[in-house]
Image (cartoon, rainbow over the protein chains, first blue to last red):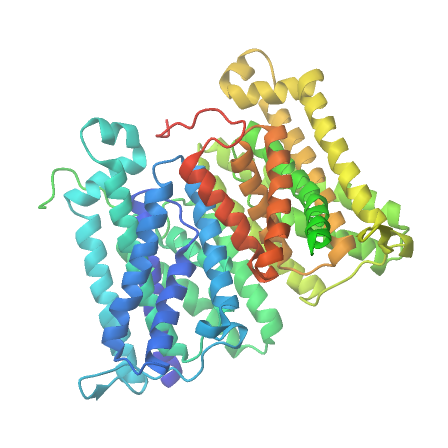
Length: 294
Length: 297
């Protein structure tokens, strides 16, 4: 039972990360390789503030979100005015830099040793201790993130994002400030990702830099694609499917040195197959005609 | 006075930079005609290293035979990536983003196959002792391997420049780079041109991998850094410019190594990315690139 709750929490955490990335990749067509970096910023901000500064989780969360949001806005401002290749490479580089900082700034992050014994979130005399309470918390955050993403993506704002994805010159020609929209959505995406990271740190209770590599970014991208880019609920479904299926490998007698490559080969292959045969993903994007309430 | 240390680092930087130059050229060779952001370049780089290891150490082939076999197999791997992954996507009218995402998928699959076949332990390829023994020039030292790397890099650059300007295939590649539709109309087979550029680009990246492996050994993490360097070199050099990519690669190597003088060596890739940031902010077209369009057409 506890194991099941753990898997549900993990799905909720990755659901948050995927929904966040979907706003950038699926709705706006910004291909970012830096999602794991923003996740790492959120996770480390929470871990450091909780273990060393004795912060309350709900005060640590905004700190991580602020750092991720500022860095995300800076990255977006510098690169999103250029062609697609530039921001792919810039986000790739950003990802490597954050990883290097987490790994090498030992005074702050303890480097390769990681941070252990991250306490469960506690607020105002109530501790989210125990799997049940923690799962409820992560599901609550997932619901908030889905709601935020839904309000952004399925509104008049979201229609402009889709217009930018299809043809940004045309969007600019009808008076939309393309750069501003891209910077806003990328910043929101980074901030939501840092929430996912903070919850991840509290769920696993141990973090090290090796979690937040480019491979994690690619994994989250795979979740977006397989779930359905441009559909908020698709992202949640994608996370649920791709997290739960490999977890079943545990019930077979497979050593972890073999199981984890097999898990990754599975999602890599699924990514190729989906892009080739069902690029819309499990839950396709819904395009509504007419103007939504703004 | 540590001026000789500075000179030694400069020299090391030139050696590393000439391998980076090959990386930059190899990425440009594929990116310019096909417009595919070929992230699987990282896998080709890794496989070239592991093929070399398998042939030379696993099966005991002579080194030069192993090198040639690894280069050819890496080239074939690049061609297979185009045939199995990119060509079917192009047929259904997929854009740059779908190609790149599939490329990530292919990279993940190939990288994890390495973990299953060769495990993740670091590997070394034995090379003749004299290649590693330093030649001293006053206080500075160089190894014969370093000299071979610099010379090879020069040959690669010269070869590519001549190939692209003088041969029929090279001209066809440039035509496809400028206007794939126009090239098709004049009777150039764009499919063949793409296959050839994948082959050449993959052989070149394998060359860089082989120098890296002979010098520093092999582990499954080196591929991503190679692609980061290759793409940064391409952007800083100016997209589509072979000379620019080579110059930028050389510069990256020198900047990284001189950076070590003051900053510790873990921050190497941070230094190369900072160079990229400066260029993106102030000169996005790079050294020799064309003007960067603000919006994608």
